Length: 121
Ligand SMILES: [Zn+2]
Ligand SMILES: [Zn+2]
Image 1 (cartoon, protein in one colour):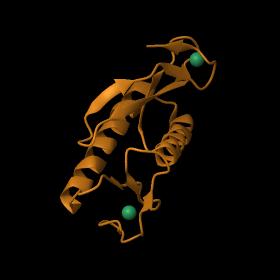
Image 2 (tube, rainbow, N blue to C red):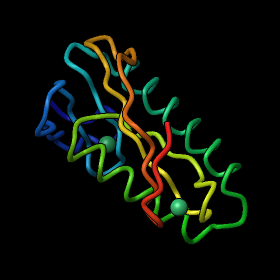
Image 3 (tube, protein in one colour):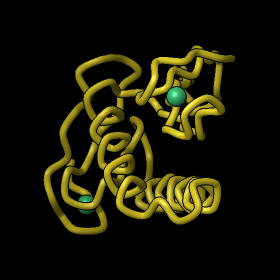
Image 4 (cartoon, rainbow, N blue to C red):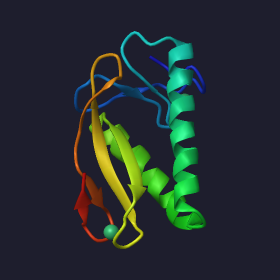
């Protein structure tokens, strides 16, 4: 399938659940998604990133790097990634979210800080 936004051929994620990713604009699709569904996913992702921007404040350069890391992680892992600020070092913490076939969260891992390795739930 091709991305409805930019017509780039989408790549299937390596790990289940089945997800298809556009490497040009970072949209993703689950099996059976319509173009409108894909846009809804993207709107949710942008909303999450906007919240992340607020949370991280003025760390603009780091933020852009974090965003690229998160996008790459999601593409590689076929999972949704959540981030938040580390209470120990101010770095960015990550965790993966397991989702069912409808994209509803079914499980969470611990947050792990990319800066200091601190873990918390
Ligand atoms: Zn695209
Ligand atoms: Zn940390």
